[in-house]
Image 1 (cartoon, rainbow, N blue to C red):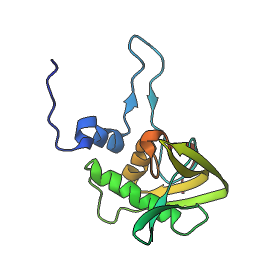
Image 2 (cartoon, rainbow, N blue to C red; image 1 turned 30 degrees about the vertical axis):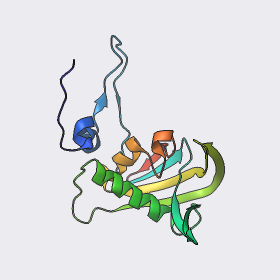
Image 3 (cartoon, rainbow, N blue to C red; image 1 turned 120 degrees about the vertical axis):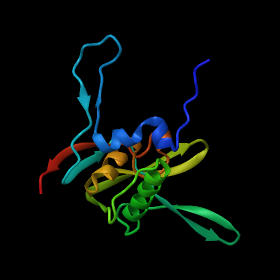
Image 4 (spheres, rainbow, N blue to C red; image 1 turned 180 degrees about the horizontal axis):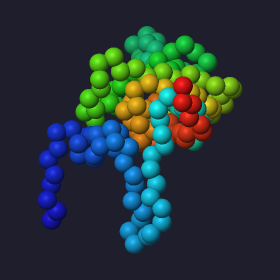
Length: 166
């Protein structure tokens, strides 16, 4: 039976601190001698596009019940909720952020709304392009873990289109 590893946090257990802080390279598959692939450069302003819809929601109380209200990137709360969600992920993996660590997202162009049925629940997500900038460790966490909600179901994945040195 393999020996169990005791970790102080999920981030330590899965090595996320090193992945996020140092942008490690990923070795080629076992026995392969292909090129080593690294994470994209995420400093400065970075233009990205979604590979899967980003889901952001808030709870709305209707009588005794709490209902989900899915947010649109056109609304003022969408990116605020995405940022708060990212900060919760950072805390969950034990990522130490410098004081005043900031991250900013801005939608670019038109976004497409998509409605999905995920595990018996209707989920609304949005696809499009956005610019992100700020604390690099948060940007790398966003790239590795995904933006918004339901990342374990494949939502919130994106790719870098272009980086601006500004």
